[in-house]
Picture 1 (cartoon, rainbow, N blue to C red):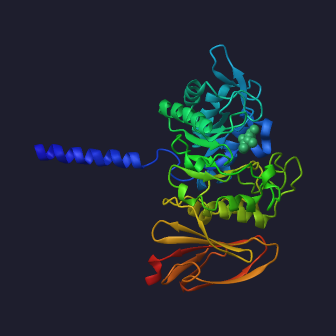
Picture 2 (picture 1 turned 60 degrees about the vertical axis):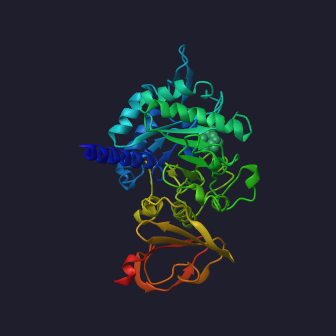
Picture 3 (picture 1 turned 30 degrees about the horizontal axis):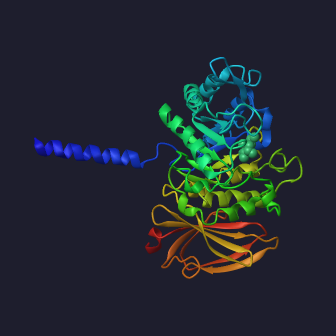
Length: 408
Ligand code: GLA
């Protein structure tokens, strides 16, 4: 009897430890759509419903895109009880009705607020109303909160306190809500965001629709600037907490108001968009698209629905790629995957086509023999010891190396 009791206590304790060890949300990087870059103030119930339909019809929902995040400008104000309410013209039936619709499609709804009295766009934020707003979001059925930091104090201590206050408030609702911290990497959020309850934290300024910008410090960052800023942050990423290099500009072609800086950046090439997507997957980054998925062309769809790349991003191990080589504009990223596998990405940073020849042993530090899957050509090779070929300007090559198959 005593032994039976002891055994069941041990099993129960192990179960609790297991449950605790499994993050309830964001066990893999969140995937979805965000309204900001393309639609800015034009968010509405009608738009979000159409995007939800398109998410399903385009096949994106089937490959893992799940969260529809309404960014800034949805707020109407606070009522007499201090409850937030949405802009009545844009969201005439309220957020609960919209959340129900989104859920009926098998998707999840995200929303935006700010750790100050006003958001970046100047509408009502959540400062001093954290518990009430978190309860409101939970009652509406919100599944994701992006929490911005405009109009808030500069220092890290205040940022932590403000983010933790909302983190605790979300936790108190008992609803699984992904908590996305957005202070642009200015106060090293990778050091404290998890302790504030965060599941992802922006590492950079807003993503612009360009390959490389020389004005990072003025808040302009292109794909390459953003990738470089992730270097060294890989140890902070893992199930339940991710570095967030911001949105995928893939497919915007200069159309996003914010990402183009009102037309200043005219967009990227298809090759560059594919490289952004591949690198975001290597970096275990959240995959949040911004384009109008109601009208998505087949070449962009082929990038965003690439199941092999998405599997790299969503791998259960949750490890973020590290740079293992960077010379003459060829950069190699290595990401450990579950099941004794690795992903390798070789990026040509330069505007010239290049040839490459790397050894799996001395360059990739993957000794022994490997079964190699080259993702873009879908070629599978056995017992490979060298990776060689051509790589176009701003393009990349991605391999998955599988040790299990090497002995076959
Ligand atoms: C900040 C954020 C953006 C977006 C806007 C909304 O700039 O970094 O991602 O949310 O605010 O105003």
